[in-house]
Image 1 (cartoon, protein in one colour):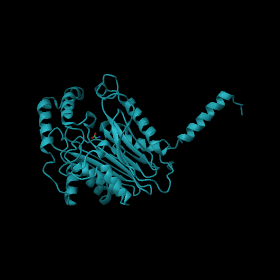
Image 2 (cartoon, protein in one colour):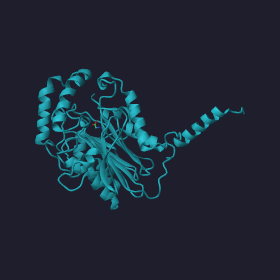
Image 3 (tube, protein in one colour):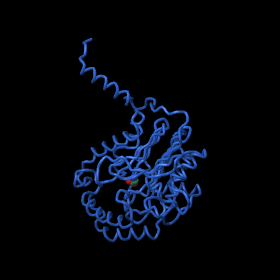
Image 4 (cartoon, protein in one colour):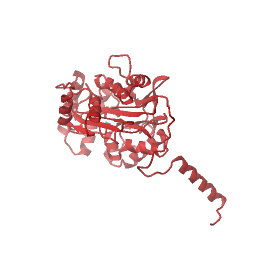
Length: 371
Ligand code: GLY
């Protein structure tokens, strides 16, 4: 064997250290996140998870955390949390009273994953049910499938006794849709390039007036929980992109895109432009990177970098050549480490035994998506 000089030795040592920090494991190999036997319960969520209360005392993260701390099933807890937002018409991005599709109809998407039981379920383009997250849970628990869509999902919900409403709009959501329709309808089915330019301006202006930040045009709440025995569960639920083309399904109901949970590694879920997560299967990738040893923050930022590199179409870039959309990930690992990361600065919600709060996300890019 040839002797190596000092510089080669230092380089080799650094490589070994890096390999130790991020063990390169093939997909499918045993997980590497070693969680202690008991961990402190934790809930991480998009910022709307600590904003709305549906007329009650608790926000989503407070409710979910309290249920986990009292020993309830972690998936039951995070779903109980997000159903507050689904039922609260003040959250115009999720469930009842959210912004409808281009025909004025609310089509809702949701998925959930139970880490310990390795169960998952989702619904897409579901009409008439205020709480798609609960229907997603029923798909996980009561069928051999992972995803039901459209009329079939609604028939399934009806048979299980869910109330089917003729219309999930409120006066506010209908009024906003009508205004959008009035200003954009002749342009609606233009090719993607023209539509982006024509509709984006009107949509952003209406969203601003409603008090919905542009990065929330894609709606959504994602909430992930960690129980004291290391149980990892998550749920994502959304009305999808405001005024979307009818039938458009985003990332939220697609396992690996808008949500992924692996009990041995952790959970990641997302809000923002669903198409970016469908293309990059982002939530799966975040969890897979955590399995390989990355901290939640580093795993999330690595995936955002991948998404940024894959965003090359002009209609998706702002004047600085950066993605013109918001995208966040809410991430926890099986050890109880967590992070909120975003393409641009925004906030996320956390609840621990010290209480609930929102914190700034770690942002990949400075400024705002639309600048
Ligand atoms: N992230 C939600 C959606 O794009 O539908």
